[in-house]
Image 1: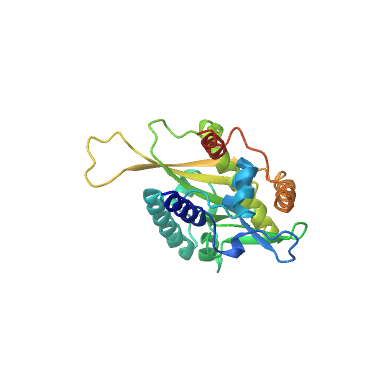
Image 2: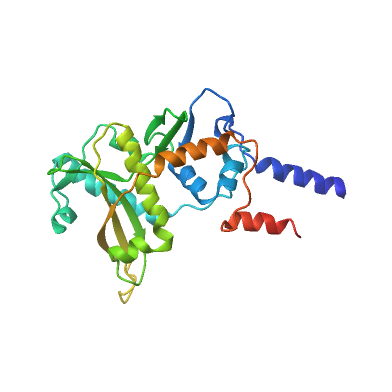
Length: 265
């Protein structure tokens, strides 16, 4: 009986680790190592979980995809691509009196693919490649600068308002996400505006019936990015990757709390 339990435990442990060696950080290596925007955010949220993942190869539990959010993203991209080809302003740009058009670049589709390509640059101070996938980029016809845009789909009973949206504790990661995207594009030698936008699509709950459709209201939320913190965090992340010591438990991390608590059983 004990041998059977041991075999099961061994198999479970095996499944818990990554098999692709390029997912592991090799200390002292001269090869550039890629850090995605999402892993960058993981580092900010919990250094211990980030280290266990990137250095030790421990896989974090997977989550199901957000099918409705993905559908909204795809439809918005088709809509903005229509105006991109025509070099015309999208109606929401006119609604908010913005002299913008969707930015037309040969790699726009690649920039959207966070897994296969995305936007990226090599940070020479750390030998880390910082990458991410963006939803859209617009072009400010007045300033001649690029404007980063992120689509957000939700269903909230409260009206979408700029101040409350940006101050929401669950949206702080959204702002860091934008900061990182702007930082990457600037290091790709693009002239990028400090001001970015969240295009928030809110699924309405007020209609009397479903009737095979969900009605959305769209709101454009301006956010003035702050990239001043990004470079220092990349250096800090590099030091963590090179460390021989696993970071301490983070009392604000649910995964750390779960793992630490399980040891008491």
